Image 1 (cartoon, rainbow, N blue to C red):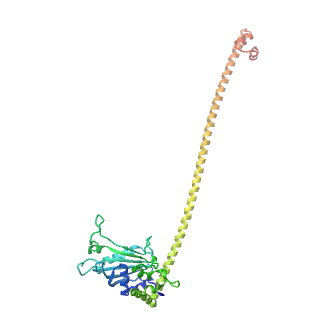
Image 2: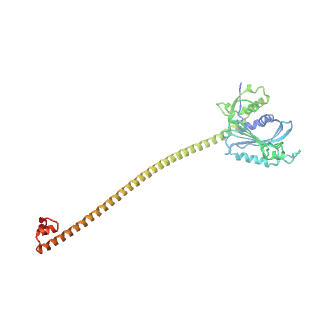
Image 3: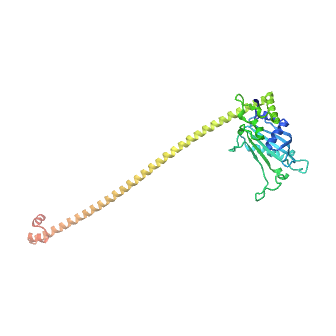
Length: 361
C-alpha cells in the first residue's frame, strides 16, 4: 500500500525528522555502518530560506558509537545538506569552524585535550562530477614511507584530531533499489517517488517497511510533518525561494546561451574573414607572380631592343664605311681619268665594269 509522506529533502522536513533522537540514531547508524548508542544534537544552523543565499542546512551531533572491537567512542558528526550546487569553500569554512571550536575538545578521559574524532556527512541534492555511486565513503589511513599501514595509526588521538572521514550521499542517484540497510534508510529520500501533484510529497511503499520498527518510526515522523502547519509553511517558503533561484539560473543560462551563440557567430564570421583574407592574399600572390612575369618579359623585350639597336648601329657603321670607300674609289677613278688613263684600265684597276665607272664619273 502506498503512503504519502513529507519529502525529507526539504530543510524544514529534514530538521523535523532529525529532531527525533531515535530516528537520528537510525539514520546515523546506517550512514556510519556502526551502532550509535546515543546521540545528542549539539547545535544546528537552519538558514533563513527567504534570504538570497543558497540553502545549506547543518546539524552537529555528538554520538557515542560502538566500534568493531566492542569498544565505544564519542565522535562528532557534522551533517550538511544542500539542494543546489555550491562551492566546496562553504563546506570547508564550516568544518574549519568546528575544528576551532573549544567545545569539540575532550575535557575528560585519557584523551583529554584532544579534539573529538569527526565524520563529515554531505547530503547533496546534486551529483558530484562523474561519480555514479549514490554513497561514497572517503576514509583516511596512516601509512609509513613504504605505503604500509601503521598499526593503530588511525585510532591515535593526535592523528584523529587533525583529520576526518567523509560520507557523501548523492540524492539524485537514489532510485529505489534496496540492497542493504543504508539503501533502506535513504530510500525515503528517493526523489523518483515524488507525486505528480506536488514535489513536497513522496509516495512510499509501506509494505517495504512494515516489519522494520525503526523505518516505521521514520515513516510515521514524515507523516506527522505533513500535518504540521509550520512545516508546510516552511516547505512553501523553500519552494518560493528556490523558484526564484531557478528563475534566476534559467535567465543566466539563457543569457549564457545567447552569449555563446553570439560568440559562435563571431567565430564563424572571423573564420569567413580569415578565409577571405586568405583568398585575397592568394590573389595578391598571383598578381605579384604575374607582375613578375610581365617584368621579366619587359626585361627580355628591352634586351632584344638593345640588341636590335646595337645591330642597327653596326649596319649604319658598315654603311658609312661603304660610302667612304666608294668616295675614295670615285676620287681615285677621277684622278686616273684626269691623268689620261683609259676607262677600261680604270675599270680593271678598281674591279668594276666600264658602265659602273662611267656612272661613277
